[in-house]
Image (cartoon, rainbow, N blue to C red; front, side, top):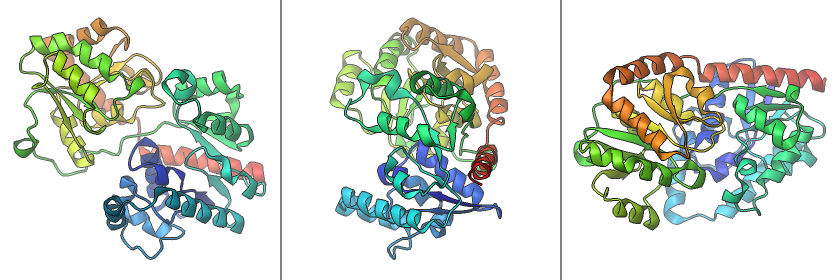
Length: 387
């Protein structure tokens, strides 16, 4: 069975859940003799691809560049024209689509450029979330992604949703028949049990001894401002507790102003974080806090679980589905609810210990092997429909 993946997410995303998802799928299939896959790519700055050099040979064209990490660094230094890369990558995808040397096509994002080149070959579309439809005021209404998404699900041979909650929202907003949607959960790429133990962060990184951890982007529905305000009284009471924010870029001027106004400049920290650093941060955090209003899945929850880090999660969207009984939940629009969950875990060490034990067991229910196996069945079903 020949699977063709396209360039889209690897052109627009340096790192993130979607590109990690496709890298992990391809990594699994690189060991499967029943699947022969290709990635229509000439250029990429994607960090997950750079960390998986074993996937280099599956690119359809690399323009004589043998090391993706080297190329990524060069691009960042000399600011190679971004739009030129999009054009060249799409040109490569169209060329491969026209060659028709594949059984199933699985685009990595929603741009429907490929429809006129498929020639009735089956295609799979994965829907990652319905955040723009749920919170339209938080996004630019000129963004074509919602319309693209609607167009793709109409004719897709099979539809994958990454959570039951996302499936429910697809049905709600796009009017799709639920029987056409297969739910396939994602997983964590962190496995401290297999990886060598890492020393505690400290010294040059100035990581505090006792901290709560927030990971990723902080804009709009990620609910960072709400979290800072809700945590303010707790942090002022617990003078040894800090807040570490991993990734998401440097604090903006407005974020710095807010942190200054509530008197927490010395207690709130921001660090860039690659995967190795993230594992260390999860391993040593007192707890992980995920205040997001909406997530299509929530890979950071499983990252925390796999590292034995207790999690405090919003009680909305897919997060209870992923966290199960292994997390404490709070109302993401009620600051007192968040503060209470933090105070509970600080006041009672047995609650924290119980969450750690449950989270490690919960993490075992999710794996990229399982994700890939279920996705392979979707490909096989699509191929059966095609024939």
